[in-house]
Length: 228
Length: 256
Image (cartoon, rainbow over all chains, first blue to last red; front, side, top):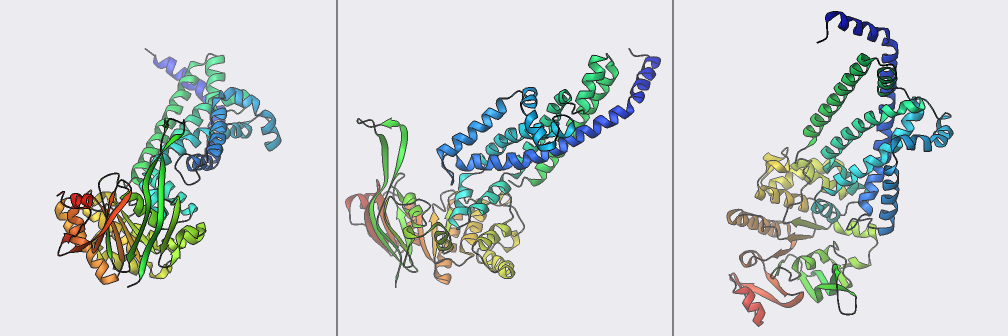
């Protein structure tokens, strides 16, 4: 059991670190915000084209599907830590530095994009083919058909964004390696390297609360949007 | 009477299964529609009838080029659809409504929005859409369900939404792919009445695919009897009886 004295000592340690903890929160939010947004845009676009170029869809094209699928598989095969190192020249060229939360966001965004692309492809595959056909039979433009597809798949897509966001939160713990900061990084530096178990426990609890919150929000929105 | 739909020697085959090869090692092609010519008059209700695998659904889908024929022409209201560019084909399709066995309504849009969607696609004037949607829902007797989602409707109601959606842009042709096969007999009867009314009041030419002889007898003016991708004959329907003359045709007709 933890005694009262031990508990208050732990709280003191956490309070002494409040600036670092606050900064870690900010860094995590920056990384999550940027990477999730970019991944939804790039991954969404990629996923739509993956789906449309697949068999029996209206952009059906074996070569295109193989190329898009190949890129997706290749990018997803990278362990995140290696991707960070491999991408550092690229991040340097784009944001001027290979380290820090913005550089880490970029790596997270790329990893997230290809992860999300597959999720989008899967979600679109679940839209009944008849609905696409009905839309085609009305004489709808391809762009309109894509809008219908996304609208019919919307509740699954929201759940996929939820999964993406939580995965990126978890990936971001490794961003400390390139000075990305964030909660995961803080837990490793103080909780693990400096044996401050209370910091580790506190941050893990915070991360859990964030995951629970994101998932609950995602479930709520998805249910509201699902009229099937 | 003028010709609304003319099929000129249309054919269609599908690559049935990549794994099945013939003795020359070539993949096996399945012929769904043998060379078929057919004319449907303006204002007619025309049936396509046959057992499963007779090619009736494929033949129907050739009419709006959901399936492109391997050869032959599809002429709707004087225009050869097979010669059109992609964008001209889209415009031509505004003139050909379609309803489906599984209804194929958009589940995340209300009944109103499902009907309005087709009007938007067809370029209907924005300001008139609300009135037109309500008029069409009135024709199928569903004005009180306008704000419902398809999941909240019965099968018969869903199909009536399908009809309202299909006729909204005032098409000249309505294609019906087994529209009653997922419905019970009572619902089927009321749906057939609905289709009959639409044909009489709006003058829409209807082509209906079905395997139910009773649907043909009650609804159609003429019916094409199909067997294994071949058109056996086009039979007249008089006094609720199908006047088949070929042996297989007679067999088909007397099945039930």
